Length: 238
Image 1: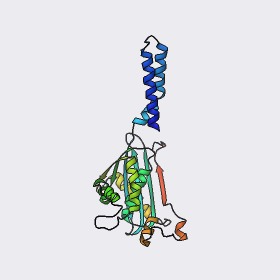
Image 2: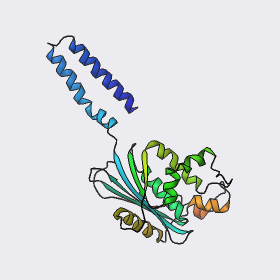
Image 3: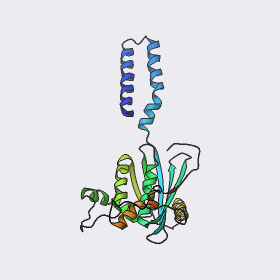
Image 4: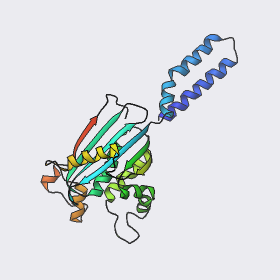
């Protein structure tokens, strides 16, 4: 929709300038054309200036399976913008927390962005970087050994986000002094240690081996994970 509007604007600008060129002495008309250009410049810039975002993610599990937490820190390149997201579940796995951290970080972006995503999970980075994810999708979430892909419910949610954004995954060594990775680890562990966490519905259903199994009433009332969102700057750029 936005690009369609851009095309209409640029077509209008070219038409105005072409008509004015037929009569160079018409200064008022020329001024009108440039006013039209200036008026719509913000829309053109918005369309063609893609934001570059750096996201760090991490997941933690106190026991595997056990109570788990995830965290994502988003920073807008060349701007004073930093946002922290975190949450957790009462019973889950470390790998699910790693994937959910990526899902939450990318889902927080309000428009298509160029993303440099840093994670200490080789499981996550390799699944995307080595194209395992696309292979699983092509084979209907069954691996080459004929076994079902683990955490398919989460991988399926990740695919449209990878289509919406341009994402480059970077693996980094955990607990090696990377400031934002250490912060993500801290947030994830704090969430995993909470006592008021909901159930990870995807994991609960997996354990029951029935994707359509009705959830107990106690769990059915809690569908959203405990989640904290800290925007360290007033700007709402993402």
